[in-house]
Length: 118
Image (cartoon, rainbow, N blue to C red; front, side, top):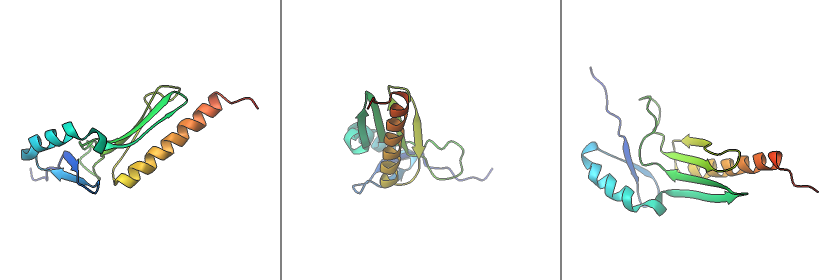
């Protein structure tokens, strides 16, 4: 069988761009990942008790072996959208846009479910 092995481990360079690492650099990835919590955090918001987090995953979550790597995740913790998530491939800027869209979705859901009396 002739096929190309996709990289699975990524780090961010100093311009916040994903860089694939070969499997033999697993320890380099582990050291970077262990020290990069702040570097991996794209966005963190709290709205009406809901926490919305967007991070660089460091691992390709596209398990279909076709298409671009999925490296970014936005997740909601708490409230009516608890455990809601979105993932994307692409750039830091696209992950920021995804984060902003999910924050707006949470706000809209909270306003629909719990309207403020006027």
